[in-house]
Amino acid sequence: MWSLMFVTILALSRAMSETINLPNNEWQYSFHVDYENNQFLLDGKSFQYISGSFHYFRTPRQYWRDRLRKIRAAGLNAISTYVEWSLHEPEPGQFNWTGDADLVNFLNIAQEEDLLVLLRPGPYICAERDMGGLPYWLLREVPNINLRTKDADFVRYATLYLNEVLNKIRPLLRGNGGPIIMVQIENEYGSYYACDTEYMDMLKEIFIKKVGNKALLYTTDGAFASLLRCGFISGAYATVDFGTANNVTNSFLSMRLYQPRGPLVNSEFYPGWLTHWGEPFQRIKTEAVVKSLEEMLALGASVNFYMFYGGTNFGFTSGANGGTGVYSPQLTSYDYDAPLTEAGDPTPKYFAIRDVIGRYLPLPNMSLPTASPKGNYGPVLLEPVLKLLDNRSPFVVIRATGDQPKTFEALSVNQGFVLYETNLPPSISDPAILHATTKDRALIYIDNQLRGILSRIDKIFTIPLESPYGHRLSLLVENQGRLNFGNEINDSKGISDVNISGIPLTNWNMTGYTFSDVSSLRDITTIRIDSGTLNKGPAFLRGKFTIVGQPLDTYLDTTGWGKGVAFVNGHNLGRYWPLVGPQITLYVPAPYLREGENELIILELEYVSQTRKMKFQSVPNLGTL
Image (cartoon, rainbow, N blue to C red; front, side, top):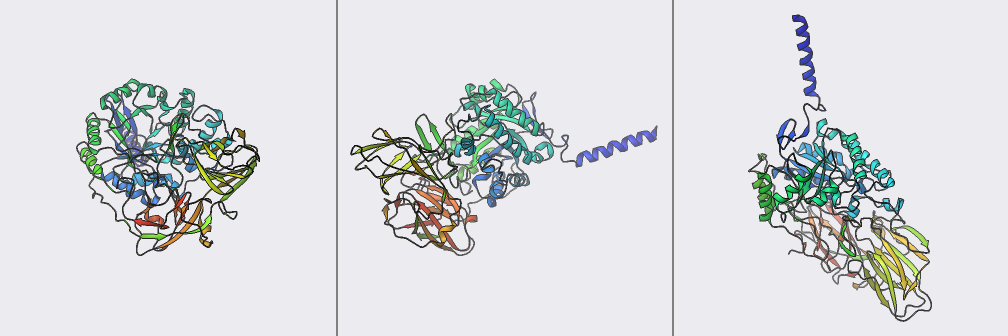
């Protein structure tokens, strides 16, 4: 008997020892809802999270640890990030998980910095990104696709993407010893017209198969019953989002209509806000932020700041808001008036938030962050090297013809420009009226001379043309960002319904331009163009500058120029548009620079500064200087 007991005890002891050492054992690692006591349980213990949104794709990977460490130093114990489908699958079946797209590395660093993770893989994310993070090629592969619905094609592509993501992150789920405690299904689906419950159930099944009980599945919607009605999914934890203008108590009452038990959660609490071109830079007062935060934490709510660190929409990745005739593209900067600036510097808002958190959670024993030094590298003289529409342009990716103009998507041009050309009829009225439904902005040329601009922003779709008969018409169309929110995210780019004085125009030549690599401009000699308005088309300009010592973050001042795109050492910094503002400077992270000689290239579309110079300065100007 004693020997049998001894063997039994020994076996139990060995089993417990093995259990403790197994990182994927649910007994040791878990995240659940205690509905009876309205709380979360992390590894079996009561838990309240205070999280900050930080999107890995909005800053160079060299800065991931720095930003995460600063978030932890503020007292937050978690971060939230979207996963951007278009970044990870730029073309069907071609997945990218390296460099700035190395999601697994980002999540591992978060865990190393003592931060849990709320993962938001979509498939739609909004995030003020082009097409809400959905890949453009969906509109090419299935032009009439019904996005974010049970449409068979959309579900097929979304399933392939989600399975790829969830397989990647599965070892990092909390139940497997990783940092991911919550995984969101879709994103603010209640704000979308479709209200397709079958689609949401299909997504839920995908997530259940891959996530199981290793993390908590949840949804996020605006704090109104009408939004929760379509965003809620049975079996996923329903949360709400709201900012300082909302009444805290009333907002959580809306959540309680669909989530009567469990902890209160604000999944997007807005300490700042987004800004569009042509409007003042948006700010939220610190006093309002700390007041609402204090109210929520006093209720025992878990809170995620959107954004705690915003970063930058490098390249052409920023999206647009609008619908029903309104179109408002967003800035390159995603500073968001967040507690950490675009360059990762703490603001007074950062420290005020930390003070509030310290009254509810233990603050980590970490040194507080300070602003990093910035480089003042002075002016750079820019010399013209190539006209965009030159026949020898290395940026042409497609040439096509058609009776009617094709969309960017049909031409496999994601972000960039398409030149549409045709001959005008030999006999029309003078002056004639040119009409073209334009998405989004078109420079109009007659025989290579600028005649005007069509603009979706300004709702200008017609212009008069003097002496137009028998001449060559060219429209250079720019994609300024696909709609990322609302019911019209199927936002194909290009021109349509083109006519002159009511006569439809046909027989089009189309040339697509993209700029993934501008290195070919280094070997091209300079050309001559006049300063001022670019009447003969956009031009590339190039300049050199030298950095002595270790490069620092800096800001490119575009004052005096028109509208364009800037590249430093081949890195696309994004769009600039100082004539419209409010953003005047472009953020340049130090990893994009090097000690010694550096290169600045710009594509100027409309107006060359009289000085032909841009300067690198140590302070940003987002329209607030």
